[in-house]
Length: 418
Image (cartoon, rainbow, N blue to C red; front, side, top):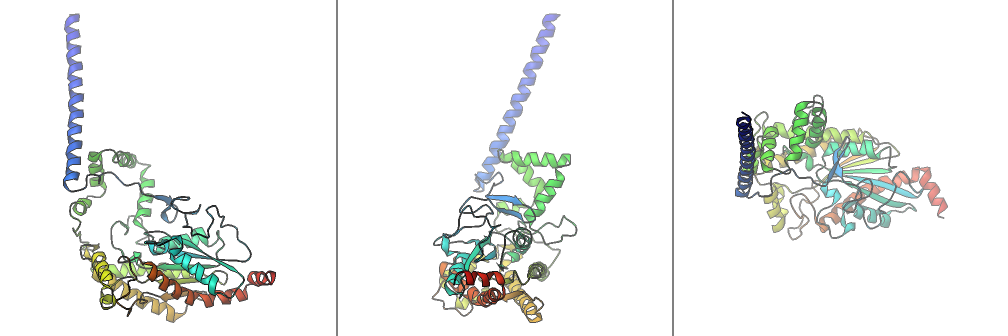
């Protein structure tokens, strides 16, 4: 009897071990097949979620990491005159401090040196041209991918009342034309509508979901997806099923039929102008604000573009790059034409006592085709930044000099230095 029971127990153990081994082998085969599928589509290393170099920032959604890649504690990019350990809550009496906000065109791309960014160029120009004993510092508050609502929140919550600005420049517009679902929110937070970055929306939803079993389960799968292609396939399919059409075919267009192209453009226009007006209304006599609508490459500009710029235009605005499923080329140009109309309306209405809105988007119209100012369809080369910085300096210098003449602190600085 005992031998029979022992044999039965051994048989059960062998059966259980066989099931475990078979299950593990099955999972291993599934994992190898999944990785093989990624390899088949040329994405062998494409499974798993990228970690990136960003950190979560309240209100804004994401920001660069402090003290990394030439940045200070606030994650502002440093030029050669800046101190890595600077404390922007303090300011010398003779310092005139400007913050320049925007996306990657402010942060700087395709640079010849750390002093080749727009903020660094403007700082040098002001210190050379301004007839004042003040020292001008222009803080680079640009961050790649930022849209208008992120710069607005940065302005209002991180700079305006904390870091002693004397002047704030917004240089933006192009990123707000992007219709990708990586940027445009899904509209899952009532009352915010579209004035939110997709990243910030996702983080907020994830925090709320962490209180539920599904949220915890989903977050666990999100972490495991970095180590298993199968888990990544399951998690990605659950959270973004349309992504596979984009992964398999980069030219796949998933058209959003809820709105036509013109209606989508108007939604982007409304969002951008709304944030421009909000940030302009933060201005006062102590902290003037200027909004510049930035230049970019557009189809109508082809007669004035160099051969390289024509190539960048084609690559950057190719119809395969979707604007909510519509042609990116037509959508961005229509968006730019509409923003120009809105900036003219804002400028003509003259509703802002201490803020200025200026349409700089036509700056490179009628330029010589022999000159190349762009390094891709959005970002500028050093020569292009030189032209832009000079134009910005010409427009803001009279405002700054008037402010300096009427502000006691700067008058005292002049007396101290005489």
